[in-house]
Image 1: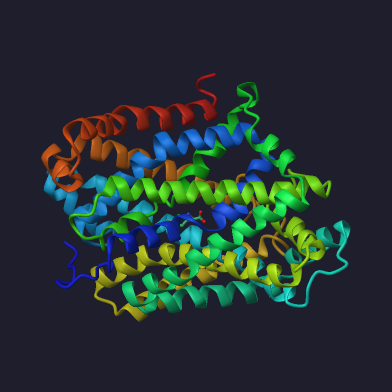
Image 2: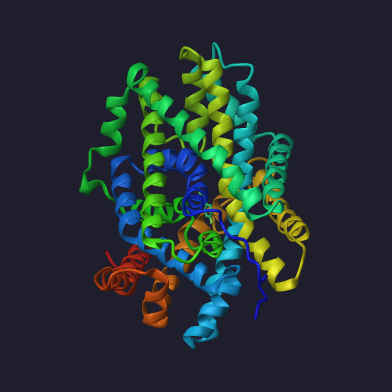
Length: 451
Ligand code: PFF
């Protein structure tokens, strides 16, 4: 059994938990990934399935994962070990914890490379984008991807930033960083929306994202949207479980989960609207892929009044958003090393950071030197993204739903959740039937077993 410190750290308040969990959820997934995936998956069809997945799969699982962490009072593996023992269940269920910490490590490796792109753009934005043309914006992004040293350099900087915060501990590092960065991020997104309304094509953006057409929902769109719902809420990767383990008893898990999901979805939709308003106003290609925000926003900053200030501010805030998420990707594995092997926090963070950094180098090289190297037809970046987002996260989610719904003792769950009998019943039934059915059907559908 993992030993846990007697005086385990706790967030300073309920709001602090909402904030750090929202900090984990809101990140590159919202500002970088959601817009480009909406673009490549046909717009509103993707948005629709994504919203359904957040509401019916995401929120119930967010509650379940938080609950497991608080019940277990340890890192994801340690927590699972405890709750599995308490339920008298087969130790195989502890796999949930291992899938989480491994997945988080894999995500961190490519997350840090993408955050590195943003760092590069932040630096460039200080000299302004004045006079930038559409063609130049595209070429600049291609040039960045073609330059391994620049990619690796920024990836290294970002990994160090992440490690520094996690090494400082739960409240003085993680919580403090979030308290400064999250409100600032919100303000700048509101500013971009205002820009979109007055200076870009917000009407076209709204049409593209919200003109729902069920007929346009295709197979791959559904899996992508479900995977993204997991990614954006940080589900199944131990991050939520680790954060939940620092949560005080007595805080309503249901309420906090709602707030987090609401904030996360709100920011994603706002970022999408702001970006597509520029895309359509500039006649850019919505389906241009992972480079979307880097090929569109500099154009807006080049033209908008005050763009020389808003530009750097925006990139700095995206870095903040990414940072508060990457912290939550590093914490689960680090906490595992600390609690399981008695490492100091510094050593644990150093070890975990080093492995993720090395893997990130392979990711950076997959855009240039190693671009011909494919596994299952995918480059290293795509492989890590697909493996985690489309497979490991839904799988962990499925197992969590089944474990909490069917295996844990009901009175333990009830004690932890503090819900009314009716609320508990509804939520447990969603976990027992709804989530497994939905995740299972989506998998089978995509594999082509059912039509
Ligand atoms: N939710 C983060 C985002 O949307 O950028 C990414 C993430 C963080 C995924 C933590 C998984 C995780 F455990």
